[in-house]
Length: 74
Image (cartoon, rainbow, N blue to C red; front, side):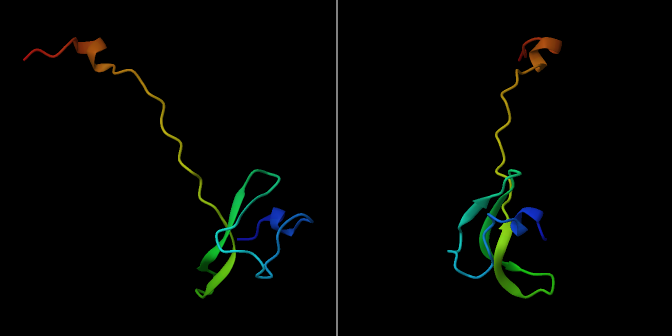
């Protein structure tokens, strides 16, 4: 995957002078990490890869079961 921000003036290069696990945030907000992965040909390569999005916890919602049927009786 080629990202346009990786070709701008302030972007890091693929010369190998970076530590594995180093992160970079481009101007559009995408985050990249320098890690080992597999290129299109299937060979392992150390490059800048898009970092997966960190999931955010869901907001607490009220329990609506009691509103329809009332409390449980047992």
